[in-house]
Image (tube, rainbow, N blue to C red; front, top):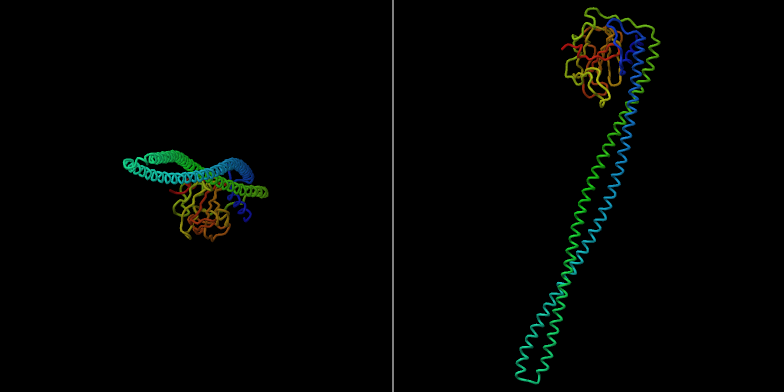
Amino acid sequence: MIRFSLLLAALLALPVLAQDATDGDAAPNETRIQESNTDLKKLQTRIEALNQRVDKERDKQDSLREELQGTEKQIADTSGRLKEISGMISSQQRKIRATQDDQNRAESRLAEQKKALAQQIRAAYLIGERGQIRLLLNQDNAQKMDRVTAYYDYLNRARANYAENIRNQLEKINAIQDKASQQNSELLKLKDKQQRALSALETKRSSRGETIRKIDERISGDLDEIKQLRANERSIQTLLKSLRDTLSDIPLDVIRDAKPFPQMKGKLPWPIRGKLLASFGTSKAGGHLSWNGYWIEAPNGAPVRAVANGRVAYVGWMQRYGLIIILEHEGGYFSLYGHNDSVDLTGGESVRIGETIAKAGSTGGYDQTGVYFEIRKGTQPINPKLWLSK
């Protein structure tokens, strides 16, 4: 009995494909061996598919890393160009400050020359006015006055020429400053453009890095699944050897106060009432696996009831299922109840429909309390919706 329970638990704990069995007796050993061989091939196919997906993900990862390397080079080049432009802007601004100083000095000199020229013009005017009077009074000084007047005229013309040169110099300085300011404005625009380009490249680098990180996670998840599937593969190989050592099925003796299990389709009571957290066939584990039964929400410690007459085939702990109890029913059917907080029954005990067999819980690594429920025909999961009452 113990050997049968262990073999049955191993069968139910693994993803399998099974041929339909008749609704009478349990499948013979040879059929189970064929089913397990099919399971093994399915696992090997899944492992190969995962290996191929990992290879594709790694190729994509390599391509993204190359693209990331190119982006980082662009960032380095753009950063270098920004540094160069910043240096050019600093140099241009120094040039603008220098021309501003030249302009200030030239304007100061021009103001001085204008002031001196005005004084000279006023002095020449006074000399000229007084000279006319003196000429009337003293004809001997006429020649001397002509020389003084001519001297002042020369000085005035010289200062006027000097002032004109300063004005010309100021015009050149202004032109240089205008050009420098224009170049500085263009450099600032170029710097802004380069900074925006650098920001876009940084965003691109961040995006590529995040994509690579997600690919790393997917590869890690696939490798973990491959590892688990290989462990399952070894378990099936061990199971095949054990099945070949089993000479005959152990007959099932159940209480006969209710209809046989095959006749209860669509009429079975629910093991517990509650909200469906997961339904048969929906995806889990990132789409790599699917649910083989119902996960029903229930308070911790709520009673879990047998859906039909049968006997306890297995009580124990299994990965993902937590504390489970498996009931064997007529016609090669089994019902499984997982995530239990406690189970009081032991292997081989007979149970009646509606009898409390366990307490709901969250074992198996889940935060949500409830019951995981499956119906199987041999090793093949069946949608509970077809069997439970509405």
